[in-house]
Image (cartoon, rainbow, N blue to C red):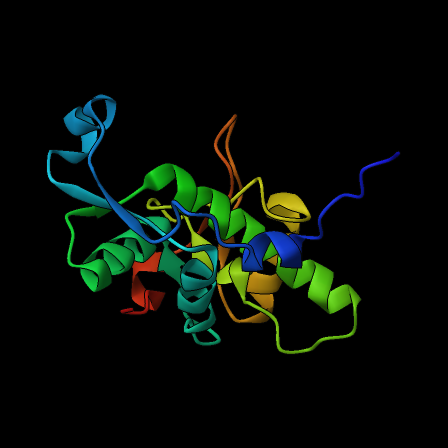
Length: 160
């Protein structure tokens, strides 16, 4: 019997027992993130933050993680699950768009800490760059293995 694959929307809406859980920062992460408490976010909480980003504005992955941590009253948000859930939100948005929905999560407004675009988003950096240009952002081409970046991205950052 063939197993049917879950849609991105189903992945986004599925909650597992660890989602929303507060844990101690794992020893392997302490050098980078310090000690203390860490939230394992819920996928829909990550999606909700991305939905708050206004047209013409941007948000970085660290900003999303900081807001998740602040809302949970902890020291940090898990970088691994947060990144995975950003990707799931992006894929679900494209899936929703293909299904005829117009009000989709504006994932293309999420950039890396240095202003670079996300190669793992649907359509890669080319599609993200095209959407950002439509919203008035300038894009610097990538150099070597470095992905393209948003020019002067700091001016467009939105506070979450």
